Length: 301
Image 1 (cartoon, rainbow, N blue to C red):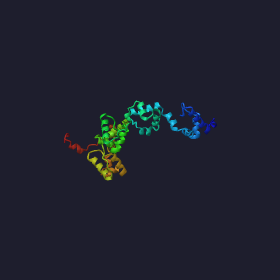
Image 2: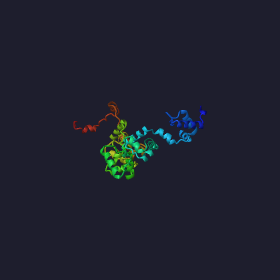
Image 3: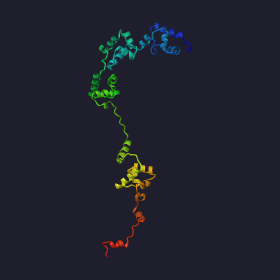
Image 4: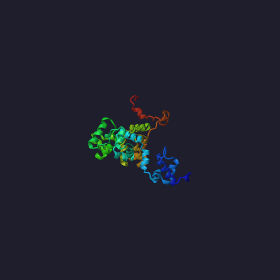
């Protein structure tokens, strides 16, 4: 039945519903789905169809959106949240709510009183100044409320701090508080593996951070030798990995680094452990000479 709907049929159905006092809202007890879809297809939107029928859209659509019960519920909600109830603020945020309230209750103040809200809240809110901003910050601090900018309510307090002090942190400092209280505390993340790596790295001796050169490498080797520390490749790579890496990088090998420092690499090889039998066979005890026997005090001359 798509071709059943024409512009004239759509307008006639809208005017008939208006004359009978039926709702012209989309869905629910309003216009049926076929009429609504046909109006959107031919006129572009349901609002355009209402306008084409010569009916003010504010009188129809707003009345359906802001019923008396909904107007009263929204006024009570705004009052509980300490939001401004002036007409200019409401019209800026909720568009036709004020006009619907005037239509249902006669005026906006009467709608506020019908909601059970103190009419004095219709007065304009006292604007923020430097003293009020500082007082509000100190009050939050005494109540142990968070002072992180994104968590502060009302938002008008934070906006006023930027306008009067140049920023929220500057306003907190002007109140005599540590500006660090405005920082969001970091989240604690458990990383057992990272903690283990840090503990191992903390146990290693700290090495000086400087730019290596051949002279610095040679001096580092000589310094270890003066301290009676081993200077073989294995020991240095374990105790001083940056020195070992720099020696290989600048001089080609650790043996060359030892030679540049004035040491014979063969005399500073790492002594590998071996069994007593192999050690005895590989290194037999030197045979004592007759001269040694002659000078022994326990041997008769």
